[in-house]
Length: 180
Image (cartoon, rainbow, N blue to C red):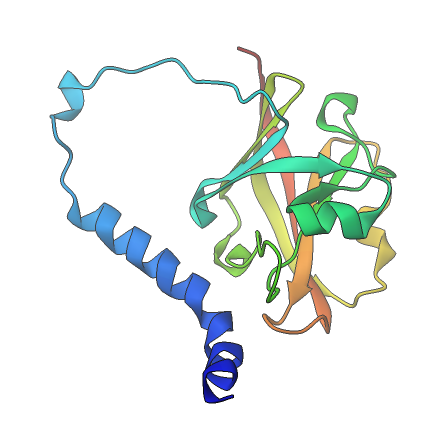
């Protein structure tokens, strides 16, 4: 019983410990060769539609289904009522920030800041976005998922960390069009 209580209390903080560890190891590991001697390899485009947020150390496949519970149980879910990156409207992605049993893909979403990059690989094309807005809205704030006339990426999750009281919303605009 005591071990279960400890798990319930400590589980919300374990991803933070892992994030800190990865970051400290990356800082303390010197590059093996000088920057001029490194060989640049061509970018590998993932087979599956994928979301990459470098600031969060996140690279996750995007799941699509009409049932949000199914998609969120898998990780990052694209709202089918929204657009897609190749259609040039509001692409809406969501995911859990914390769960005891499923993937908490957006646990570190609070670390993202305005000006950070987000990469979305969609149908074998690379879409590069820059964060332009971060806001906290109530759960029923439907304006963030509404269609837009301009290309926009909207990502949201629950906040504060262990509750579903509000939604943390990140919006990003494309900075260029890139194809392999």
